[in-house]
Length: 594
Image (cartoon, rainbow, N blue to C red; front, side, top):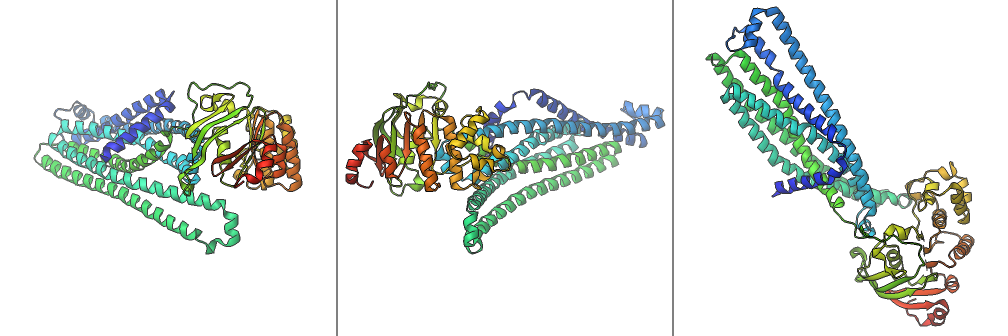
């Protein structure tokens, strides 16, 4: 059962990698041909020694080469010695070329696979990212793909070649002396059986080890985000170090177990080959003593035994590595085979210019299990209509469902029940990018990507001219800040923009929204982190640019609510008011919880 699961996982991996192998047929064919050449050269390499020993022991019968050598010994010995050296050099050169060809192929395939994996992760819904630690995803994207690449390169370059070399050598041995060939066949079969059984144990241990490594990486990523607080309140006296030490010990113990199983596998294969070789030499020596076998034949058998020992030991190591490869493949397949739940499909309609009417038709959205706290729905049967061009204040206590409503309109998630419509069409039938391209968004806590300041502002309009970017930055009040940076607009942003203050990050996020100049505006407390004067200035600017455009503005500011056209009030995921702001002001004292 375990074996079938492992083979199935590797089969699924091959299907996943196949699209990334386009254009690699020629290097693969070259690598295969070079592998066959390496096998042939390794099989041929001991023969010059056999012929020389047959000549020296006067065993000339049945050998044209030895008979020729007897006629001109000096030239013949020189020629066979040169042939032995040439075969060894050719085998080394062919093996080098094969490694370069196949490893280059594997590296290119996994370069493309990793890029596709990263793109796939970016398209997974927010619910997936919120339920998985950043450190765990980092481990899978970077380290698991690297281990998988090494494992697949070893599989291409070593495993198949070792099997081919064993079968070719075994065929020659059975042809020369069936009894001795049978000894090697039994020894090799036992070694393969040991590798198969032990490989499964290594795979299970490696899978657990990768999971523990992922947990450790997730802990490091989480705690480093809080490094300021840890230093302020004393990391030494906190539980952080104890927790890290405990996870680190678990990871170490599991890694040691994997290493022990892998080393034990190599030891058992080495022991089997030592016994097999000793038995073959003993039987061969008896055959030489009885005259049934020549000394050259015995040396040939011994040379093959020694030559096979290295590849089989390497094969054993690759089998152990294959267990790690399987574990990494299974972890990565869990990501690649996960279909984004928010997808418009091949028939998604590309939106024209939006008018901006928004309708929520009996919408329900589930709360994540980790944060439900006894409450199933973050939006509970919401039905409302927002007229095109209306600027709407979205109000309610914390946890009322305001941010969830913005997510649904932006289609970062789909409702569990009901529909969200824009301009009369279900949002799920649109090509999502065509709607988002007409939407300007400022989240409550802006995060900047690891790009330059210019690229961060132009994130939603990558073809924007620098002059337009500068105008947007000036309108957001971020131009002075940017000009003081070491490289101005070309300054790289590090650590998600954490080195900027909250207000500075928010200004850059507003500049990005202004540059996109969307037909829809989604503002989640956009003045968070600004002082009062700067907040008032930015509010006036946003009120100016959103005039005539559908705007959802999450706010707790009564003065701002009074200046907007419409109010939607939520409480515990339920709609408690939807109407014009004048009506809301009259009824506000009667609306419970708002």
